[in-house]
Amino acid sequence: MSSPLAALFLREWRVARRIGGSGAMGVVFFLTLVAIVPFAVGPDPNLLARIGPAILWIAALLATLLCLDRLFQADAEDGSLDLFHLSETPLELAVLVKCAAHWAATGLPLVIAAPFLALMLQQEAMALLGVVATLLVGTPALTLIGAIGAAATVTVRRGGLLMALLVLPLTIPVLIFGVSAAEAASGGAVPFYAPFAILCAITLAALALCPFAAAAALRYLGE
Image 1 (cartoon, rainbow, N blue to C red):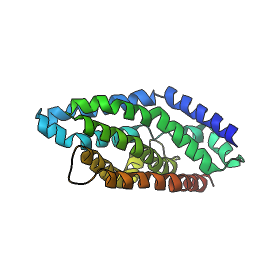
Image 2: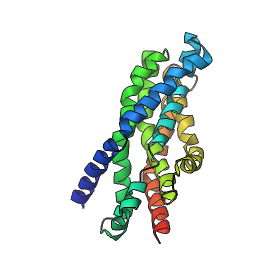
Image 3: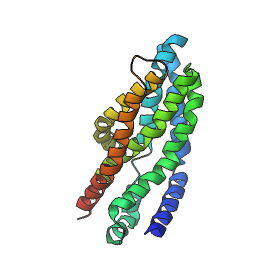
Image 4: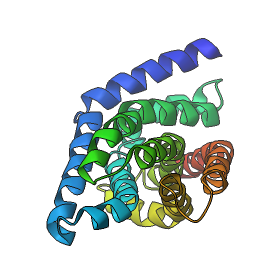
């Protein structure tokens, strides 16, 4: 079973890179959102340092959602989704592999770009490390949760806005504990490990539950 899944991962990673340059587009969107913040709130270094983790997390969330609407639509249009249903490989594993490839092509570049963008928001070394660690742990949860919305809107043309409306409420816990852990890394009142452990638990829960929910939505819409 590992060989078909490995082939699927490589295929999805290459497709994610080619269709619209998803990774580059997400990083550019990420950069744009972070760059306009000083124009909106002012160039005060203390203010930027205080709100920096929240801005980076919100920008990462929106950049992740920007690239998720086509996660299953291309497969539905070319008939690959029907082959997933007929394959001996469980659909849940196929969904998990597609999410992993999508995160490697779009989420990982955001994590790599985060330290450079954090410097624009006057983040100190510890805060910068906290932001990178929380994004590395939390962005897979955003992708997995987004897969549910992408599966639920796979038959809807231009369903990106509907997918965002479905997914955003589910991502609020990830956003809350991701920002809390990033702020705690710079010396907040709350210890870093408490919100970071909860963020890890949310990601593990998403890893266990979201592929089944997305696969169930795909099966229901495919009937």
